[in-house]
Image (cartoon, rainbow, N blue to C red; front, side, top):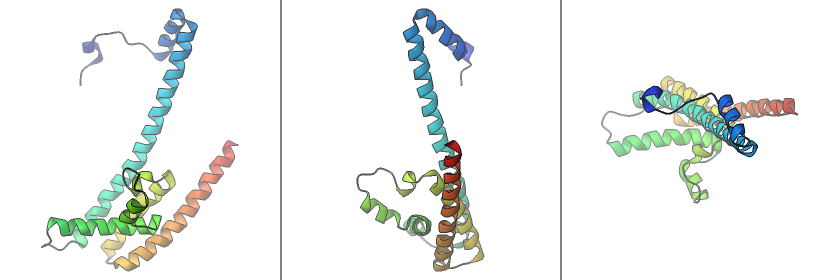
Length: 174
């Protein structure tokens, strides 16, 4: 990565840039401020999404390690191994969203990505928790059926709690 001094040019604090813009014209300063605000809002939205997705990715690693260590027999080929991982991912999908990834794709042919890409913050938080819990249940040796039932109850409970918290925050804003 290059040092800023090596790249040439002049760098200034945003307040200095705004004041300089007012020398050019008041309209230019207003345009610059609005554009800066728009870019900052866009940056914050993207950062928030990245943080939520990274949270689920971290727990996904915990989840896949538990699958690898406990559910995958030693002599499977790569497509059989992928099936085990997909099956476990679908347990979480069914427990939280009520459908498998394939069912979601069939119902949402025009959507890009997958069911988890369309998840809201509450769903992503719940999913991250469920990945961790499912890893724990796998390590305990619970059957897939028992894990699905437990995870579904947990998903319902957590979504109720997260929804109540979300409503409380909205009421405080008003």
